[in-house]
View 1: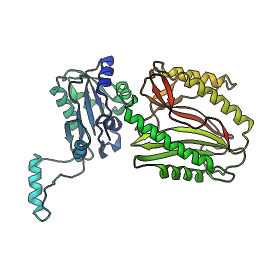
View 2: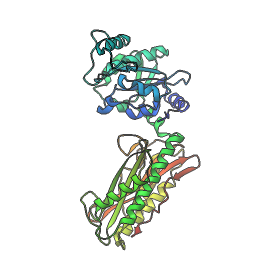
View 3: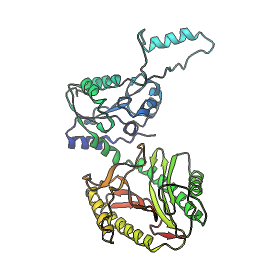
Length: 411
């Protein structure tokens, strides 16, 4: 997987934030910046397993810290040449010239000698964050940044991790660089946009298959099986996963209901291509929709259209939330309230990531973002509703990656 770090964008964002460098700590940011796998030591989501140092000056090279086990994979995948390694719990070694018929003891001793492994060498229980902090301190000094103002992806750092990092990197002035790190990932490269577009296309194939399979008596679990089969049959090797939140009938939260006339079928689904998740939602009804369902869907459609009109570069995301809320309430649903009407898409641990289309979101919409914009409502006793598109933000405005009708389609 290629790296997607845009050094020119990074330089501009750091200049705006008054940063001399940025330290990335999350597995997602590591892979985005390096193009290499972050390795097994990140499974605990604790800081210090990996790190990337990105100087604001694009003329200074980036540096990465990875585990010794994943160093060969890193060097094969990444353009970052300054790699520094830290030990993890796994005993392993690279001995491409090892003679299987020879003396293993002598050969391993020679390997350890080449690694400068001394008698006191020991592996940590999991990984050694202290080694990572030491590498970062040395790399900052190497680049003349020992006393610089350095942004840290603090959203990936716990209060327990912070004192050790702060002490180890002094006299550098560490500040919160989370927003800068997030924006670097929020503005997608052409390759990332391609992954998300491909994922959205696969998801629509699955949605069409589910739509065509809806019939009296069909169970929620059967529709989920149809979704999975359709996606996997259409997919290439780039498909790395898929997920679904399909509901049938008046309970949008669970169970394995079988469809009856008048039932809603909510299809909220996504496919992962190279780890990038899509997110699309549509609502269907078996037969004639009840009056209440028609009213609610019409209100959500009004909110969706109002919000879409605001998804233009330069506007704060809170404008979209305000417009969608106002339009839905104008249909008579005075107290409708939703925390966010969508989110960024990428390679995070879930299907939703920053930025969020929320009432307090001052993040400004920018070309290169890919957002899931949604107007849902889940009403136990009636069913689940969702209208959701995957939106690419261009210089000229929002462009949906979806082709399916937004209507409450009767089946």
